[in-house]
Amino acid sequence: MPPLRKYGTKRSTASAASAAIFGRSPIATSASVPAPPTLRDPLGELSTNLGALVLVDTAKVSSEPEPELLPLLNLLHLSPKSWGTVLSTSDTTLEKIAQASYAEVYRATNSGGTSILKVMEIKVSTNPESLESRTACAVEDVVSELRIMNQLTELPGFVLYKDAHLIRGKPVPQIKQAWDAWEEKFEESMFPDPDVFGPTSTFLVIELGDAGRELNDEPMKQIEQVWDVLLGVIIALSRAEATHEFEHRDLHNSNICVIQNGDFTSIDPNNHGNLKFGFSGLEITIIDYGLSRAKLSSGEIVFNNLETDPGLFKSKATGEDKIQFDNYRRMRTHLLTGERKMAAFYTLEPDQSKNGNVWSEYIPYTNVLWIRYLLHHLERSFKEHGVDQKELREFKNQTKELKTRLDPRTLVKNGAFETAGGALDFVWEKGWVSQEQLEERGVDTTILSEA
Image 1 (cartoon, rainbow, N blue to C red):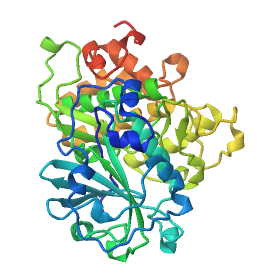
Image 2: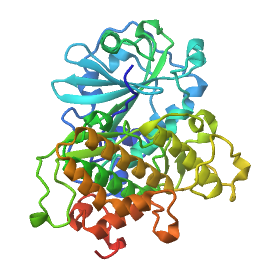
Image 3: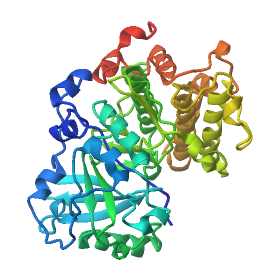
Image 4: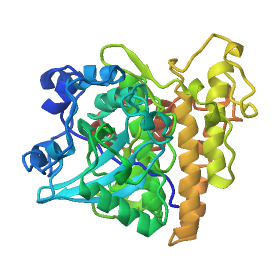
């Protein structure tokens, strides 16, 4: 079975759809976060393009939503609808491209372009089978992700949120066909056959932009790619920290996507000096905020209480996956004790926290842990796929101090990073990114050290 994956990309301006969903006008949303130049997806709103192409759907949608759906409906301001009002067979093809813990991911393509559909079955009392399903999710588990997604969608490097749909009934034939193709290709799906769903089955479908491939599927062949992914993630995380006190808390290599949006140019120290960023043409997108924490523009803190999933801190693995699962334990240890060591599995109880901290607290050191993980992944990928291994040795030499400051064993008094912003300040001082590049991405360079 293939690894779990999740997809998305950034947007430029707030749409009327997202404004309606989150109770704000498009003008107010745009004013709250500076928007980069408009770069709309060619498909625009998938619901607008496809909604007019009605597929006959015999499923009847109840006008009385279940009480457990109210937290979602209060945000969406929508009533459950049928699959046929969202998808049509006349000009749309679907391809299942990934599956995550609670979502199947499809690429929808029509004459206008492409969008990504993240499909999640919702647990509802009118469908007892969903309450027992290990792949269905509770409404409260998706609300925080939607709200964070809406806040970050204006920031370069974050997923383009387009729309959301609450759908009732058996999925349309395109879903079944795409599911069958996945099953034939990979032999096994962790999600039920669409034919098992019935009239009371309820789904949340989130429409996202297409950000290309997950990082795990993009081999690092050129050192310019390594630099762009590393520095792109540092820049994006740093700005999100500054604007929304954001922590991703799950930034493994399936939650970063890359797409080729520019031409490749080799780094030439004679012409470019110390500059390392912007040569490969790769653009990164940070996705999936299921475990994330952020401060909304209203001041409200949105987060996922990771204490409800003890298994997250008990998982074992080897190699690169070991670093990923160790990160969850390191995050929890730092939250509860303020220390950077890694407590064994799940030995710390919540009342051992020095300050009574909970997961709503802002602990940006978690972003530092994931930057360290990313650096390890990039080096490993280039070692396996890189064209010139001499460049890897040079890269390791150039990033030796960066790696030391990312190391949990390094003390803060000795230069250890406490935030992604601290890492950005370091790469800025090194001259690896330019002032113009940072300002293009909305970073206030006046708060950074003088180079």
